[in-house]
Image 1 (spheres, rainbow, N blue to C red):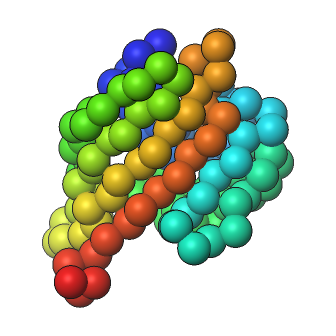
Image 2: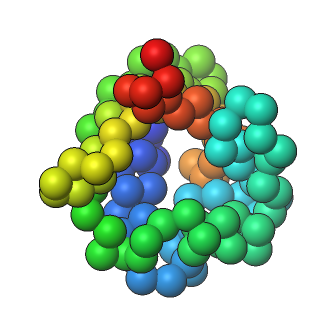
Length: 119
């Protein structure tokens, strides 16, 4: 699975009820940082719990677009735009730093979220 396909699978997973699909995206020992100064969420059970806590549910209304900025070996950088709504009530521009295992699942996820009010 390439980087674009992985990001598209991530979005589908966010929109899918439950969290079983998380195991298709992340390795069992994956680390997930929700921001550059956050402590990593480590392991599938913890990532699943964080997903359930962070999202409003699989029917949460949002639009997401992305652009792969760079790929070097097993590491990729992706720029995303996420708008929640309609009406749009929250907007984010993110950078994701992803490190992949040999099987295509992510072993390291680092998010740098920026909201318009952060400038």
